[in-house]
Amino acid sequence: MYLVCHDAKRYIIDYTLEQLEQLLQPDFFFRLNRKVITKIASIATVKAVYKGRLLVKLKPNFESEIYVSKERCSEFKTWLDQ
Image (cartoon, rainbow, N blue to C red; front, side, top):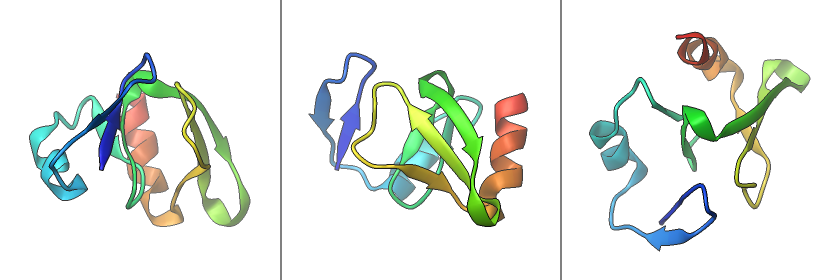
């Protein structure tokens, strides 16, 4: 697993996403799906897509598309609006 900073540098880390979730401040970080946790400042755009899911674009660009599931959309929107 690795961490990506705003300058696009990657750092290998020895934590699982579950461990990181417990360590990071929930006001600033959100687990988008089973592969990605992001900082609120790293969100470039959010777009509603099919089946009630959200497509999130990050800065710097992530290597694949990132979707928030329909089940987590409400929680994600509340987090963004804080």
